[in-house]
Amino acid sequence: MRIKIATSLSIFFGTIASSFLLITTTACSKDKFDKYANINDVINAKKGWSQTLNTQFGLSTTIPDEWDNTWHEYELRGDCDHCPFIWRRNEVENSVADKCLRIKYINEDENADPNNKKTKNITGCVTTDKKFEQAFGYWEVNAKFLNKHYGWAAFWLQCEDMAESSPSSWNHGGEDGSEIDIFESFNWNDFQNEVRLNTMADGYEEHYKEFGTSGYYVDKYGTPINIYGDFHKFGLLWTPNAYYMYVDHNLVFKTTAPIANHGLRTPTDNNHMGVCQVPAFALISGHMGCSTNDKTYHAPNGLPFDKYDGPGEFLIKDFVCYQNKNFIPYIKQPSDFH
Figure 1 (cartoon, rainbow, N blue to C red):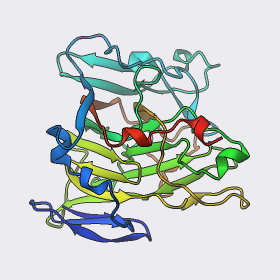
Figure 2 (figure 1 turned 120 degrees about the horizontal axis):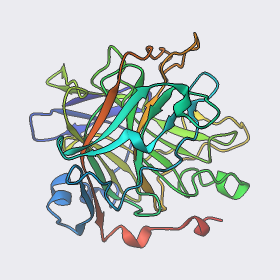
Figure 3 (figure 1 turned 30 degrees about the vertical axis):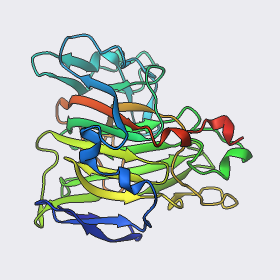
């Protein structure tokens, strides 16, 4: 696998002994936790690794106990001025027939939205908030992305204290709470082998900071792999010092997220980011940005999303999480920083 990272920090990192050849990464020196970043040790529970949560979707029609499909239901999201969308529990189906979780994307009568009829764009979300959280470890979903151009799928982690916006928080960057986007599948017309990894801190307003890859491209022997065409396993190995991203158990990206390369809306803030040190919960969610009423929602690359052209779906077979006992002594709480 040859991975091209669209960021000025990218350098050649190394090789792995498989049919996937080249790995690139942001500049990272080796650290004492690198020895635990072997994916085979993780899934085989070696070198201190053990499984902490395993959800097989589609075993029954009810949502598994460790997941909630009502999180922030009906709250306007996305570009609220132009093309907002909402999450609704009806758009999350645990399908026995398909043996997976189906997150649907629809555009229907505005009367479906009790928020003063503000949007027709409706999709769904599940989260482990208040049910399961963990700092560090390995987090993975086996998923098939939405294959439409009006929205995207996401697998991400969120910390309760991420939006803390006080002077005592700004200097810690993402260490005392982050949003970690393991993937955002914007499915741009010409880049169906591309996903994004980002980490954000200090809320979403004036003190917002972000470290982002701006996308990485998944190739095999130089040939793009259409990761929107089938199920693939997307994993984040999160150590106290770095984030490692895997696609189908092949390492594609590593970073220590040293500084914010986006955001920094307040010039007086420092640009420190760093790796999150506090517990997070998981989210698997649909997002919409289709053009409506001649107002266009633009993807991060500046290109507009297409108009709605029929229902879509984001499919998830399973979710699994592991922890390494050697990471546990390094776990902190937000209160340790303030």
